[in-house]
Image (tube, rainbow, N blue to C red):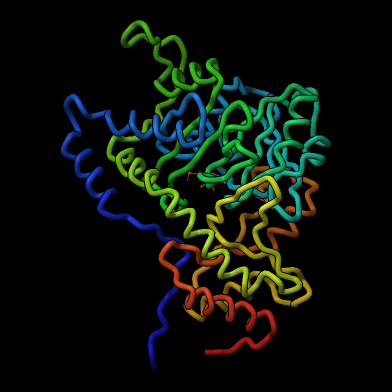
Length: 373
Ligand SMILES: *Cc1c(COP(=O)(O)O)cnc(C)c1O
């Protein structure tokens, strides 16, 4: 029997440019150039997303934590978060003594539903935290209306969203502050790593100070508040700079992969895919499908069936309100999208033939021809 080649979930290209920058950073790990790539990466990233300030961090989670802290979120404050998102949006809220309040998402974008967010407002609500799911884009006009009406700060979880735009504005630059991740499965990577971006001078000043253990900027080794330490290393920044210089290549590839899938699955009734609403530009970080229950096939049966055919997938995130640390939230759309959602293999090395194999397998399983091996 011929071994079937495993089709992996993710994967990015590390080339000659990455090797050259990283080796240079390794060789300059101490001495006068030991922070050079951090500065270059932050500058290049700020320019790419068109923001005034960028602070590199050791993770996207760390960037979200710093962002919330810099916005002054503290004990007893409520932060509205879409229920369908990664836990990294909620944990930092809890670390700060604040309370995550979960609202529902929109069925097509899988991102925050501004009307549902509005219904969760109380006198303690301080911020709203849209999550741009899987490189999609939230309805930021809707979010902005709610934030403006109630005087809330907007912190964007733009972790997977390099290359995502809302009109002419890059994701992460639409509110007070945004967070990105360069974790190994993302569209551009540093291994682990993240970036906080803001154009607000005061938020930047506070974020920088908190990120440096609360250091007094004018008196060496003097601390007048408790902070955190979330630095990115110069070696990671070297990798990040090289990946950023190649970002258009990765974005074009992700769009091509989505196109291959869309040709095969996009017009099948009962299968929803990533949407790109007019006026937005998404990055198709991971081509994803949400199946409805007309097929009588569960998400688990679909992913198992694909696994038997050597195809890796990821289930959608669970609604966070289902976790034992949190209270139930009334979020029917988040529950239904999560129940039917899987991310399909979308690494940059995938070929059209492999996409064809994945798509045929999906259709085969959904149509009940569940072939046993
Ligand atoms: C990847 C991701 C994160 C977390 O980023 P880390 O760098 O792993 O901490 C947070 N939110 C979303 C939506 C993500 O996709």
